[in-house]
Length: 120
Ligand code: 5GP
Ligand code: ZN
Image (tube, rainbow, N blue to C red):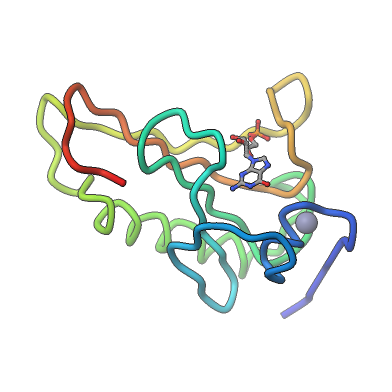
């Protein structure tokens, strides 16, 4: 698989462990960790272990691992049993106009709950 790194990228540093993070899952292609400024408890970022700023920059083998990892996270976060009090969003922003702040592709997994459900 092709590999790309940017020594100045904050998310590449997180993948390499040079910046600490709360890691939830790591696979050959994917790294998932808690967002430092969560929109809700359990707000997770799922990123390819390949430096690319935009979705269209990322090789398919990395993209194809993102959704299975995201699915595992929904189970780990207790989001696979939804009722009227619980849901989640999966979001991925490309470009400043689309509210992208960090130029390393990341998928947000954002739990939505209407009450305290014990999520981290
Ligand atoms: P964007 O607006 O680019 O889609 O989202 C970037 C996200 O990265 C934001 O939700 C922000 O809180 C998160 N973030 C930025 N820097 C760090 C960091 O150093 N550690 C972690 N865990 N999250 C970060
Ligand atoms: Zn990067």
